[in-house]
Length: 229
Image 1 (cartoon, one colour):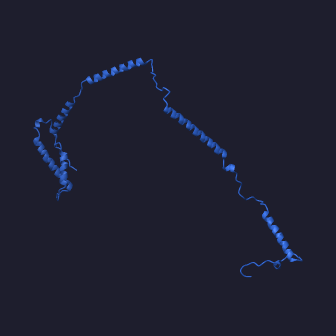
Image 2 (spheres, helix red, strand yellow):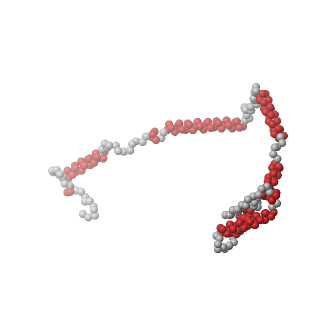
Image 3 (tube, helix red, strand yellow):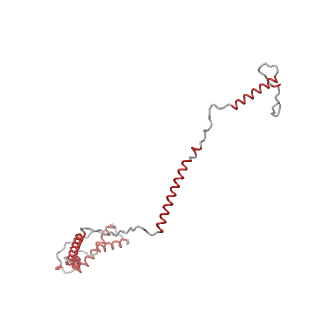
């Protein structure tokens, strides 16, 4: 047989396992018993229930909870509406409650406290009058005049001019820009030598402008000039 087509079943292909006189009837009876067996197998009930559990609507859809929630929202809505009506009525109408406090505090000790406050005020005013009427012990103009005299005296008795240090530094900064060559002195020694020379020249000019030695308070010893760094 070709084409995969099943041949028509007849009694010739039936193989009986028991002894029988008619194979055709035996085949018919065996097929009937087999069909009854298959029907019993399909209609047999399950011993183990492996299906999904039953769904109960009152567990998923909680009607009581929904009812309580709706009642709560209705109560809130009603209270809000009542409150809004009261507020609108208050805004439209004139006030009916006088909330102005016209009560004056009466104290049994108020008169005494007023007298004490008046006394303290008079004492403070008297102290202020005495302070402002007192002439000052120190004169600002006199102090300024004394300071000017002291500065003039210090300039007269000074060994060096007033601005000698600033002038020396200015001259040193100028000399640094120039190229000075020397075979015996280092640059630092040359700088100190130049500053010393300028200070000596300024000192000699200041000596010529000083008053006579009789007007000086005391003689001063010779001071060595410091090196400017």
